Length: 181
Ligand SMILES: [Zn+2]
View 1 (tube, rainbow, N blue to C red):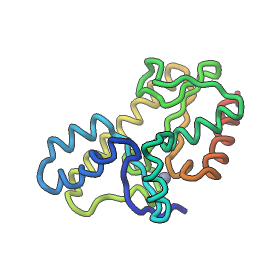
View 2 (cartoon, rainbow, N blue to C red):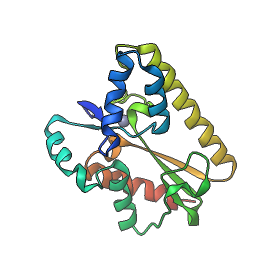
View 3 (cartoon, rainbow, N blue to C red):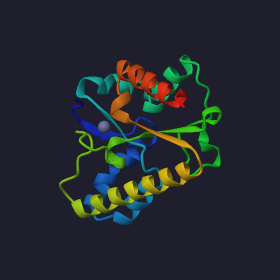
View 4 (cartoon, rainbow, N blue to C red):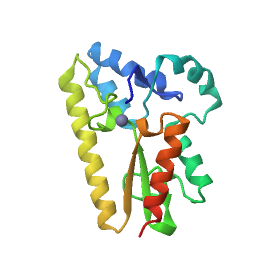
């Protein structure tokens, strides 16, 4: 199972997300709230031994979990659209032909159950719990509105695509589900 090291984003937003903890700890909750609402799931986690390698690749992009998944799905012949196509919750991947969508959720922000990444910070716990509850409630609202509009909704957790091997296995599983009637 995944052993969390620390959370941060792999893109430029990393600094901002990392500083959320500091912002909250310094009592600057309004700004922390604003930033995290803007990008609720732009976090990533890394193992200590992966960190420097991944950090070195950040500037080259294509390190985000959904990109690993995208590559696998594409190699399995599935064609998708990005940017949500105006659908509720702006799904990460949309498969119009199968009327299916995939969200790649960060385990921390979206509260992957029984996942070691979904820790709760020990300080300012109330703030974080409230934030997490809002995220989960929003995810539930989005899922039910998509489903009631006839879309199949699949969630992929970041820990399920954290390595090439995991991304492959997860991609195959999701591809089968998307194609299943
Ligand atoms: Zn997880």
